[in-house]
Image (cartoon, rainbow, N blue to C red; front, side, top):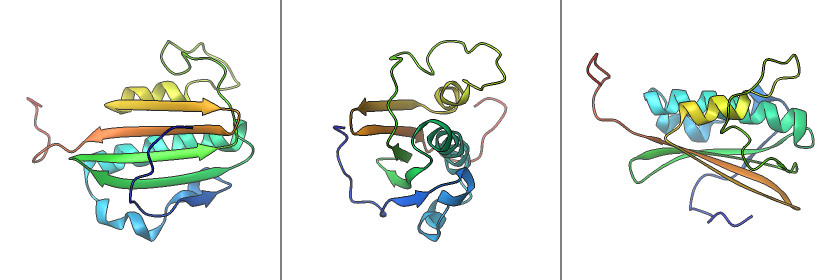
Length: 133
């Protein structure tokens, strides 16, 4: 995987989607992008638990006016358009990465024999949302 390693909090291991939240993300708490990043991270963590070897690592940080979430696991995504086209209704899921793409401003997927890293970028918007924004 070729994602640059930023100077951010250490990776937080998880084996259940709800277990990746840690105290090192508190400085982002309360912002709308953080809430959306948390939702996106939860979807990605669930995918990691189901399809990526039973768990992975997650990080949240702020850089260049954005909230960034990264989830890594041992799985490999074989469909290059996963999450970029409509998902069919299925009892087996298939909508997690699609939801992440709808929540985020940018989603970068890097997958290979060593696993998958997905980074989600959400712009910080000035002020509170209004009906016009």
